[in-house]
Image (cartoon, rainbow, N blue to C red):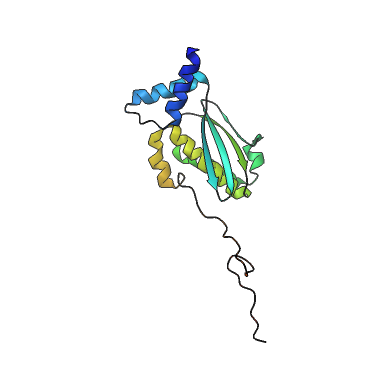
Length: 164
């Protein structure tokens, strides 16, 4: 019974973004995560794509919707987008990443995964936030397709006008 209550306390401390005063407290939280074999989870969004990303510390691998990342995102430019937070930060620890993505196109999905990984890294180590923010990975890109308006062919495209 004690183990369950301890696990709940650890989850609360990590997911509530509790202000931690000392480095020792940060290490304790990380150790507790490793004990219960948990992951850090966050959500990334871009246009209509939503990615739920899980970071498993001290493991290796990268899966998106149950497939290897290289198979899901077939083009190398998408690999670059998805791996950019980890490539730029170069963390001392290894991470296994698991992502579930739906909605949007393939490019928006890649950017949503990038956003989710960045947010999970901040949960892992709050000191990374400043660096990731400077790189532009923390901010959600709010741009989306504008809706079509009544009487127009597209969002802003009016029908062709003829004098006679």
